Length: 377
Image (cartoon, rainbow, N blue to C red; front, side, top):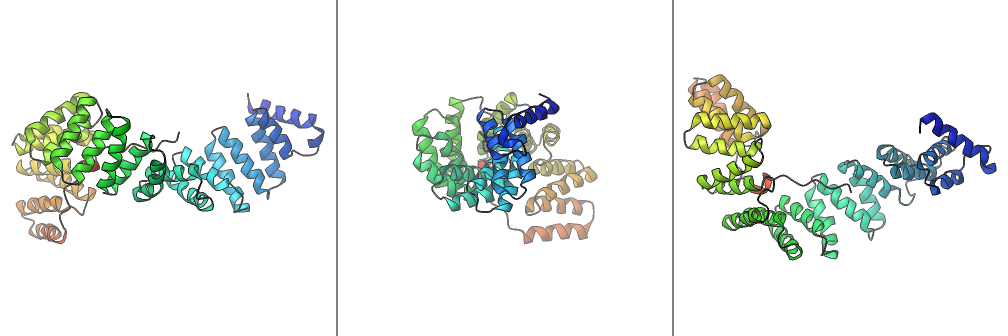
């Protein structure tokens, strides 16, 4: 239906109603809504808000109809207007949080959902949306706070336990993550995702052989699971088991030829074995696929420095520094390069930064694996 036809339909409805001969009323809008005529109802609510611009309830009702039409951006605007007019109007903050959540605006959803939960601490929907919004907004410690009671009250809901386990991983609460993994496996013994979560948690607890066993179990259950073989290969790589790591990275690339991380660490293995041309080929493919993998730029810089391609090596190492200035290894490599080309002052500056920085702990496999997004369904 065109906009002109829609407007004519609304006009015809209003003219047919003696109660609304002078101006549209909430009763008119509600009648249309009950008939399932959401677009027409929204038009009437718009007219009501124009006639009564200080009617908070009218704006809230407009938001509800727009949400039913899945016009969440417009709905959020209407809800915000309602709140501005009457901050104590019941239910509006929850509806606003839901509208923002549905758009994937997780950060914007958090504050109204917190207000809704503060008003009614028993509101399960507000708690659920708030927990998932914190998770989607990468505020994992807060996500744990809100999701844990939900997972405990609904032990059969595997999805709750999965999201909670991932949140625990990113707050480095590995015991919590393992507890959730066990809950998942009780419900779904063949869950590859649960084995991966367990492997990530065990790796965080520095129980690497057990972590490897969990990833191996996941590979038996679901050998084509995306990133699984990369994760297993990375665990082998960190354990200096390079033959096993290479096998897993190659398996990942057979499934996904553009997996930038598998290309990077396969290139790193070839560099360690002094197969520099092969290594450089893998590493360049990696940075073409993704330009934010620091290790790839460090290795490219190191190889080019050995080949005396100093200008290109400098570019690569500066990119590595820019990606994470707090890591000393790129500064050290850059210092070596400056020393090799006779720039003593620049070399000393880089080596000085190395002394100032504390070596970060080896990154665990959890930091390399992709994070499942919060669902808006």
